[in-house]
Every structure is written in structure tokens, then in C-alpha cells.
Image 1 (cartoon, rainbow, N blue to C red):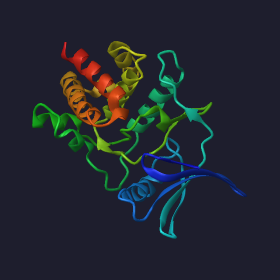
Image 2 (spheres, rainbow, N blue to C red; image 1 turned 120 degrees about the vertical axis):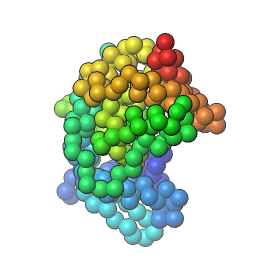
Image 3 (cartoon, one colour; image 1 turned 30 degrees about the vertical axis):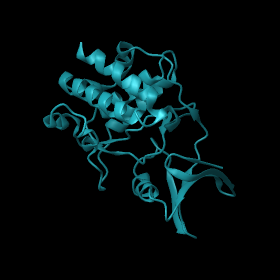
Image 4 (cartoon, rainbow, N blue to C red; image 1 turned 180 degrees about the vertical axis):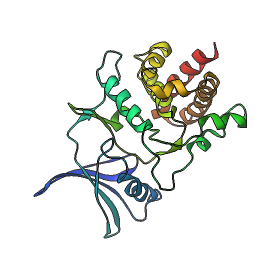
Length: 235
């Protein structure tokens, strides 16, 4: 039984009806909105994400039960077959209708980091986006890839997840900007992004991750990746 960035408990239960993945937080936790949000969104994301089975609030805890996916974390190496599976999953997500729930417009997450406020319009859209494509949030099974931990999901431009994945590929220090963008170009959504929007997004992420990395050691790789991509886009 372990916790995570957005949960105090995360464990697998073996029950008479099968295995269940359980995660949750105490009701007094400052991020108690996280399980509540995942419960609301969870019914809309299967099979891209695990199916929500139940949401229980009892004993001072808010707990979610999901179908257990017997997979491994994705590998982002250039020759990894996982990258094709991830591209297929992001393409499936980009083609889904927007759920009829109150989704946060994600463009405001970069409001402090754009060169011009008008650039935010490039990041806006009506697509459900995951936004946290850490390889630990991508589970690989023989059939497909699945996205887990939807805490930071919201509404944004159709190409946003592909662009955010580019930064994660570069953070692995196994890709060049050209190879990461070539991978992203496998997805139709990538081609809906205006070159100016990608330039602005790369620059905004370089600024954002630079600020975070100045106080958080875990963000160093993302900072390097974002800056590398921004330098590539500025040429």
C-alpha cells in the first residue's frame, strides 16, 4: 500500500468479484477536491482510463474504487513500442466528445508565463485533455495503453496532450526535439496546431517549469526538456 502525489492511499484489493484499485484522501486533506473530481470524471473516461466502480465517503475518508489494470508503466525510449500505443490512445482521447461536466479551461495554467496574453487563445479548446503524461500515469497492457490519474484533466486545445507529451519525451533525455515532434506528428491532432501556437506553448512551458524547478528538485528534468523544446521552436 502506497500513496502518491495526489493521494494518501493507493492499493490493490483482491475481492470475490475481482481485483480493485483503491485510492483516496482523508476528508481533511487540502486536496480533497482531487478524489471528488476524479469521481465525477471517472465515469466518462473508460476504456482510455480505468472504469470507476464506486466512490465511498466514510470514516473521515474519500475513497475511489477503479477496475484494476494489470499493466506496467510506459517506457519513453525512442525505440519503445509504447510510444505508438500512447499516440493511439491520445488520438482516441482527442476524438471523444467533450463530457457534459464542468471542466476547467486549462489555458489559464499558463497565464503567467505567456509572452502576450493573447497567446492563451491558442491553448483553449473543447477537447478533454489529460495534461499529466508522466510515464507513471501511462499503463501498458498487451492490447493498448491506458491513462490513469485524471486529477489535472480539463478542457483545452485538441493538440495540447500531444505537445505536453513532447516535453515528457525530452525530459527522459533520450529524444531530440526533432524526434519528439516527429513522434507527435503521428497524431492528427498535432497537425491542427498552428506553428505560432506551438512556439508560444513551448516558450510558456519553459518559463513555467523553470520557475517550478527553482524550488522543486523533481522538476529539473521537465525544466530541461521544456527549455530544449523552446530553444528548438525559437530557431
